[in-house]
Length: 256
Ligand SMILES: NC(=O)c1ccc[n+]([C@@H]2O[C@H](COP(=O)([O-])OP(=O)(O)OC[C@H]3O[C@@H](n4cnc5c(N)ncnc54)[C@H](O)[C@@H]3O)[C@@H](O)[C@H]2O)c1
Image (tube, rainbow, N blue to C red; front, side, top):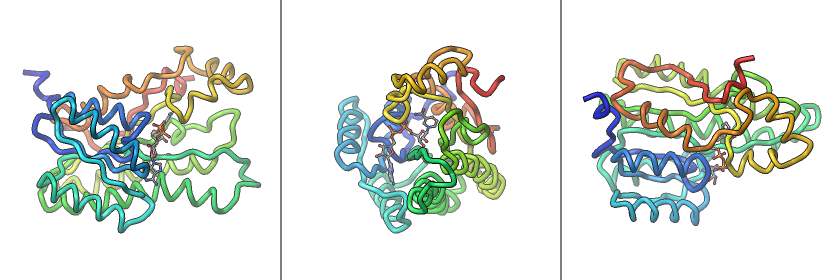
């Protein structure tokens, strides 16, 4: 049956940054589709809270305090996931941060931090979990990029963020090609403005809110739940012929 291909029953997935925002909604969606979840989260409290919510639905879930910027922390998280559940079937790289600042003034520290979390950290996770998937000759990786990987947002200056997300899209394609022989599929989701802690406050800000809404054909920010069906599709057999793709969900922002 067609819908059976979307099932994640018995699958084991890791979600980075799953303690809040989009990551939390992805965890809930994967669990609803039948998966057990490892939440790799820098914030110990929110990670544990999401794990408890998932366990309450009858699925298995653990939270592992992880800083994706630290390869040793990432490797320990992957080892723990395998020790706990025996294997990893899919990885969603969702953890990310943003920074606004004019390029000529942005501090080296701020620039490095955005690249470290959004790009380097994502790569460390792909590498640690990818080695395991290569051994098993199977796996799916879903990277959360952004429409900012394709366009330059206005009016806020955020070159580090835009650059990191463009790199995530190209890393997605690179890994998709390198790891296709191992039956590992790698795709990216590129959201537009979503109503999470990262973006919502700015929609209420008179300086930005109206301008942003005017640039979105659907005239509203997206709800995190509107990304979840695509995440389940990419984690499941339903997307068996898809790899190296970067799918935009942005209410039409990048269409004009
Ligand atoms: N919200 C949007 O409008 C939007 C749009 C496009 C893309 N995105 C992307 O979606 C992803 C999630 O964004 P969100 O809006 O849910 O953000 P959020 O700030 O609500 O959540 C991010 C999560 O990542 C975790 N995190 C941050 N640094 C980490 C680190 N070093 N190690 C491990 N975990 C870390 C945080 O603790 C937090 O739980 C990000 O990659 C973001 O760039 C968001």
